[in-house]
Image (cartoon, rainbow, N blue to C red; front, side):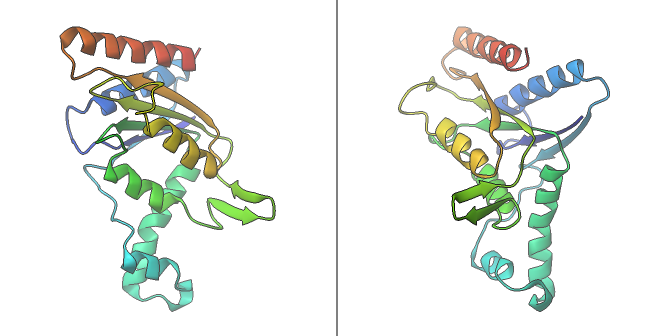
Length: 199
């Protein structure tokens, strides 16, 4: 088994979402001795934003790209290849202002490519990244699970499903900024989610 851990926090150290993602990976390794783990920390190696120059590079035929355009597309190619090469993807996702971090959005924009990771058909869009398990480890200062304020869960479910990643399990560590007791409860609930997802 090959596991890809994506840390999406803007923090290089001490991120609660990274902590929960690490707990998921540790459980996977315990269940699958010898599993290989690749960690991509988007705070340490942030991916460039999808801007006008990047769009120009992506929509220019490969044999007509400038060296700069080819280099920009190659950065996205590397992330796509990384996802394709792994069996399990673990995403550590904090909540920033009710949404996902820009670091994660840049990663999503990089791996979502028409004709490569999804395609449009007469029956609608089809995701092309198939046969993988995904664990999304959320960390939140407040409590939003199963409320209208949780914009993250439906977004992640939609975008991952669009790419063909339909076997998705959500882990929630919530109430982490609401005092020591709430923090302890939040991490305990996340551990319970991990146990249920990997039962």
